[in-house]
Image 1 (tube, rainbow, N blue to C red):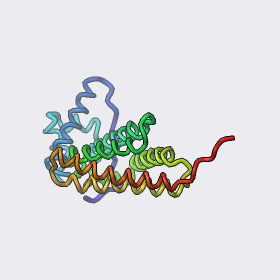
Image 2 (cartoon, one colour; image 1 turned 90 degrees about the vertical axis):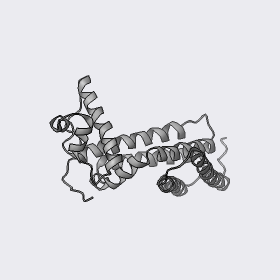
Image 3 (cartoon, rainbow, N blue to C red; image 1 turned 45 degrees about the vertical axis):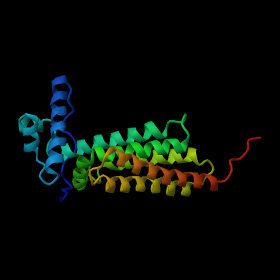
Image 4 (tube, rainbow, N blue to C red; image 1 turned 30 degrees about the vertical axis):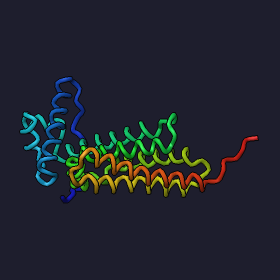
Length: 218
């Protein structure tokens, strides 16, 4: 799909009344169904409006084009991912390796449950890849990982934390994407998640063993 750099990807206006909220929710629910069934290439505002049971004119009140709908779906997905990361990695009552293991299981399950929509949104990425919201979402997720690793690996140099964070994120993303391309059973998801968690937790434990000791306060 080719991207038009002048394509507007933001919503035309935000819903205020309850009925307007319901319309937007209906459009987004329909968009998910159309995207999962038709893919990004055959995704159109007309198909979404028909599936939602609303007129194209009503849809255009809030979404000026299909790029705006796709961008809203992607933005919602970014927010869910950030919430998942924060909810797990910022739980300081749980040991770091246990948090990482829990994240791996939750992330792989999410990838499998939403495989169709994620693939379609990936195909549509050229429409909004360089949008400020996309850049901010990546920055926020990177910071969540670095904050977690700074806590898990006190005393580790900044460059080591950066490499570790990027490596863990890339591994999760690539394995999750590849693994979810095929329909998986619950036992398969659990087994693969546990194996991946073992690998990443072993890596974290190795880094922890290599990290310099924390200075003793006088």
